[in-house]
Image (cartoon, rainbow, N blue to C red; front, side, top):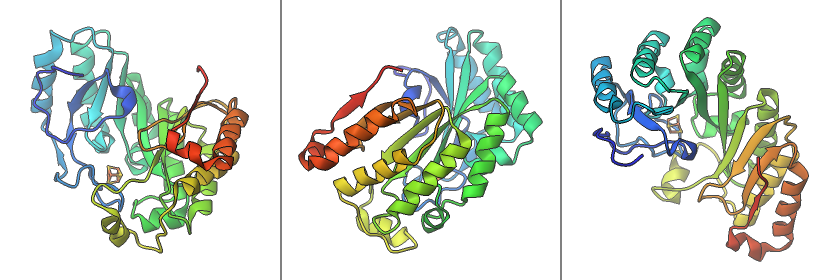
Length: 296
Ligand code: SF4
């Protein structure tokens, strides 16, 4: 949102679907901040903001934005806050924004697992309805090589716990994260993990190198072989082929994706795979950033 009278601590990130949400930074940076591919918060030291500061920010914008329906809690993993702190913030938001319908945040699986089911239900009932979780991969070897600090099982535990409490999860996977050598296991195990979770939302981004490829390779604890566009699209094919989802909104529509797909899995699985096969048979199409979308 533009023109908000809040002095954000930059850089500030939010998921694309939170473009119209009011954002409050309740933490700064990421409490983990060690993933090999991520430079989002490398310029920031993790910090929990004082409740009084957040409260006064909420108050200061509450008159002008009192009809707001969606709030996103930043930065990298606001869910790391204790349930007590999150409940204080949610109460303040509900008090100041009477039409508030949804609060969301980025989370690490361990941030969810550290809370009891009862705490998660309490948070959900207070408005925390959606968590964005960059699981990146379902493959333990890849997760270790990128230093994610999570495993297949820890990710599964966290995500299932959120879902059991009624909190929706939006899961992100990084296309190309393991390089060519680990591509197949990355795709197959990521599909296996999302099949177990059945997330409401699933998206893919393509691995990028904000500080250059060499910088990433130095941090990648394995044999990284960079993938071509066609390798990345083949990996997408393996991922989608192996999904067995009932009703997940799927998007690969970030600027980093060569092939834009938007639809529902598994309803649109065949059409998406047909589109991928079309690009694989016609490699020039990969340069066109082709789009396939079905209304949801
Ligand atoms: S947990 Fe997320 S924000 Fe933190 S370093 Fe890893 S990818 Fe970046």
